[in-house]
Length: 372
Image (tube, rainbow, N blue to C red; front, side, top):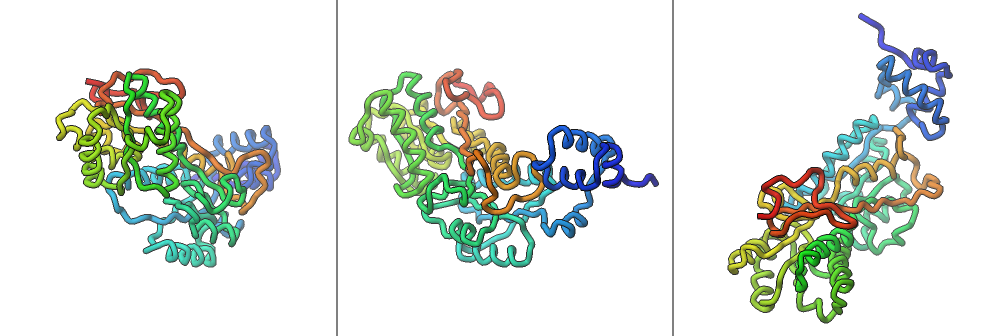
């Protein structure tokens, strides 16, 4: 049996020291680019693979990132987290890392899990999901100086540019603004909005995108827009009832943008039952359900969200978690991902190239996704 290549073999092939090879594997940012590329080339030629267990003993790092697995409360919107976790796991493997999923009954229980996993050296960092205003999980992790990244902005807890609170998020304001401008570009003026009750950082941000598009195009005031907007809790049945009421009171409504695909699906049911089968509806999240029913939506580009998560935790090419508060120089300690439009049947308009956006997410619209 052929002997597996060692660190010494890589060092000899690249013409560098054993320590330089170790630096390339564990802290590539401190190695000159030419040297790093030479070592990486030698690793590829020899087929060298570092021994994960030995590296964990040597570096005293677990090469593991902890993520709470939220209970599925909504099968439609819950798929967003599933897709994010899938992308996170794929990219973790490419960096020699692992994802540890755990469950918790509430935020206090989640914090207890953080403490136990940290004290047992079971994880090197955490990724939070489902952030909210004054999130206690973010405050605990920042206070304990535990490396973490939040998927979602730390609404209200500190300035959003605070280098102690790393986050990656999707620009919901830009997404709803693009969706609204898309409908405006097709000649619609009275475009309604269906969202969640005020006080949700994510929901308020998405509503602002619709408001800005309407104000820019038509000079709409807050009073004008109040009659075109309605709010409800997340869910298809609640959305359906809310839009049944809206279309009865606003017979001049021409189109609708929604804060989620769940809300948009309920809206589609309501307008079709009201005898408006070609009424344009736009969702947000680009879930599998949106694709199945032909719902136009805003795609969050979750692979890019996962990439941003790892850039913040480990640097552009790093293979180990950076310490909490690691100096970032000019690098902002957050990533705001611009989403993309996916135009399907529910907008009942021909997909066209849009300024500042695109008509599709990861693919060109199929015949079924285009206007009928």
